[in-house]
Amino acid sequence: MSQQSHVRYKRVVLKLSGEVLREPGSRDSISPEVVQKIASQVAEARKLGVELAIVIGGGNIWRGLTASHRGMNRTTADYMGMLATVINGLALMAALEAQGIEVRVQTAIEMQNLAEPFIVRRATRHLELGRVVIFVAGTGNPFFSTDTTAALRAAEIGAQLILKATKVDGIYDSDPLKNPDAKRFTHITYSDALSRRLQVMDSTAFSLCMDNKMPIIVFDMNKPDNIRLAIAGEEVGTLVSEKSQSPQ
Image (cartoon, rainbow, N blue to C red; front, side, top):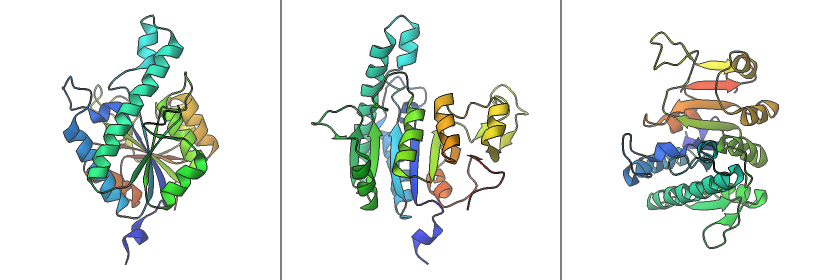
């Protein structure tokens, strides 16, 4: 039986926050060792034959919203955050190429010496050819998060799943760091997540996923093999979808 027969989802968008590139407790914005570990997980997932795109944040370097709260013009601050995602994307590209993975970086803000411009048809063709595509610079517009970018790009390229990497092993009914009795959901519907006011994604991103019936798996990035297991259809983290059962 081929490895591809174990894949539940053919095309997946992996959403990484910028913080996952940082060593816990370190003041360095990017840890080469952590980036290599992430690249190894992505390489293992690619062996399953899945078409994988990545959207990466820039919060380890710069947060536009935080800067705007401290008096900086929000538009300028957000553009600075978009540039931070480019730095992270290039770091991840280098690590993936060291693993023997073909990569293309596509940017929503044109910078021809560093990356390709985002073009849907070109991105999907790269995926069909087995390349990992990293989307950087957000949507190219201020006031939109990289969660929204992930939801938008997933819809545009016809992905079947968004994998949202976090530092916790799913979605809880309350903060597990403050409440030892917090309950983790293995699955929850969009409507239940809204009614419970669970912070799966920001409201714009979540609405896009709900409108396009795009399932989301929220999982712990720090556990090895979680990306591969989620793609293979194993129970990992919390699944957010339209129906009460996992999609087939």
